[in-house]
Length: 111
Image (cartoon, rainbow, N blue to C red; front, side):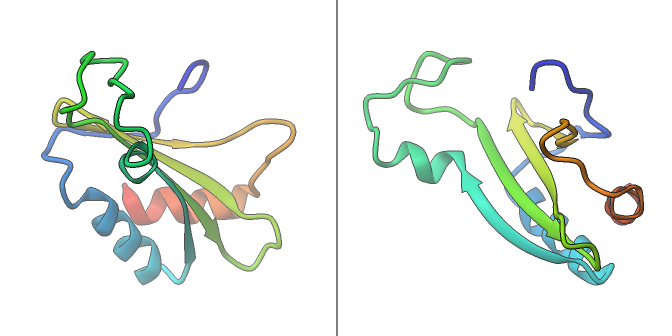
């Protein structure tokens, strides 16, 4: 993600990290809505090579989760995984601001 810094980097196999993140966030009392899955999106484009590897067979994955608490505005959590590393980002733009309390809850659940 250009211009953003991850708040969490995990150097471990990525196979179950999304499930782990969802479970940790749910345990913290947050509601999760998955909105994007790169590998699922690539299924409808079989000739779309990976920008990192240049092939169809890659370990890249990007998942976007909307995370809700008591505030009406959710936070967008982006998990970008490749080469056995997962980077966790919170979207923070003028068009999409998450409350400080929600950000603290998300980071507290995952850190």
